Image 1 (cartoon, rainbow, N blue to C red):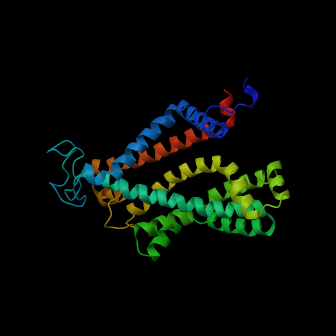
Image 2: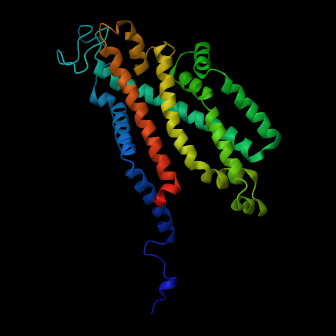
Length: 297
């Protein structure tokens, strides 16, 4: 007879340990219908941005018809802008620049904030004092104004805009990472890793960081929305690449015609609103999925 107590599961214990958290995460996320709707909307926007050249093989800067053609007339679903450019094409292509800058800036924000916050929270002492004073210095500066100055000092390209946004928005991530590292570093499994001679680098990145990721991942999702708003604001003010179409640029180019052709401003504004809302809903869903207290309900 086979001893069932010593028989491994059919797929092996490692597979069970990996699959159960993933299934539980997906189950908790799907329970939040708003988060699922946000994911669908955001996925549709990303799909349109990625396949823009296939969906609409037209130059978004090309003047195709009479200016200020209302939506639905002459075959133009969203009408045309002040120069006679197709608004639908501009919106689809504008999503590419907006999402790329937003994602890149959010990634830079996470890298800077996580590095500073983790070092401050782990080492504490004078390291914490110095890094937190630097953080407070950036916190008291108006972020949008600082981003405008950085972009104005350098060439207004998409990489410059992404770096400027990342440099001014990392303070919240740093404080969250610091709090998580200060909490986790005192737990027993961290002390055990330190007692067996693990180096600080291994403890920080291999022991503490994986356990601090859930709130940081939620914050990262919200950071994408903030970066998209910053990019739209800078493009609206003309502080972005003039040769790249973006939603903020569309609003900025047509702001003087708001009363005469409101769709040229409201349509890209709605696109920004829906994207940021979708990202926020995804963040709420991630928060529910990572929250162990909700799993007991």
